[in-house]
Image (cartoon, rainbow, N blue to C red):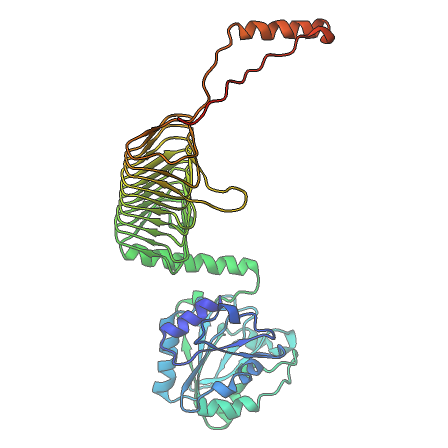
Length: 450
């Protein structure tokens, strides 16, 4: 939430941003280094929070106060509020909105000339009169102040109220008594006023924020089939003519190139996707997917996976810390980790790179135009040269030179009448287990890599 508020202030052109934090500064880790922070030692109200930042208040500047738990305020609104304060020369301009049900919000009491007289809090029944509770215009909690007028008024705010807190709206009548002008800037979009006090309100605000993101992307040329069932972070970049199918979640620094299709039901986290790619029913994190690459269904690409143009990671394939060369394919049912694959290779079903020996990770190098057959294990560190073919069921532990055929499997031995012998033994066990013959091994002879 604080990130959204800070981003709105930055986009509105704030020259300096100060965050009022709690003891221990829990927000500091999520703030950029150029954002200042101060500590409010005790939660004694909004005026007390602003007092903690008085050392940063420039008397010659327009000071805009935003709430950290009201994340939907737009940069355009922040800029317009500051402009209104400066154009009118008001000591304070307060952001307001009109609600059909203003329960729980401070009410705006206006003077006969339409300026703001005061804000009445409603946290306790004794805070406001019945007439004041009928007012529908509420205080959003966002203000623009002339710094020179704010500082002395802020110092005089008291805590004579039901909560015993120092309310920032109490600055307004103090300014008026000094002969200063206090005005209001009313919002049309009340969604910008929504605060977050529990997880229900957080979900409501998140849904509105998500709709804003999706709407902006669609107006920029992205097709989102089902916006209500698509999650896209605000920092995600989608090129025109990208198609996002239902059930997708795109997070972090993800970017997708023109003409690519994502989904359905795909998750991308910090992923770069090129143009013309297809990523369906897959989970991808920290990977790079090149132009015209096919991924999925049900692929899992982990950090460090790099798929060059026209390559493929097919059904039930897991790849991590591996570069797959242009035009190479890992079509299905394989694990490729800590490897380099050249161009034009075809990795057969159930190919495994055995990259971990219990102590260290080792790399596998697979050359260009390599073909591995099904059920191949490549025990790293091992290298396959260019144009290599690997026989089905092989466990490769030695390097294979260019153009060679690598085969490493047990020699086959057939035991005649084995099924009859099994039935005889079972019958003997049923009659008298002591007389049952020892079973004959179904294993074969040991072979060596060829």
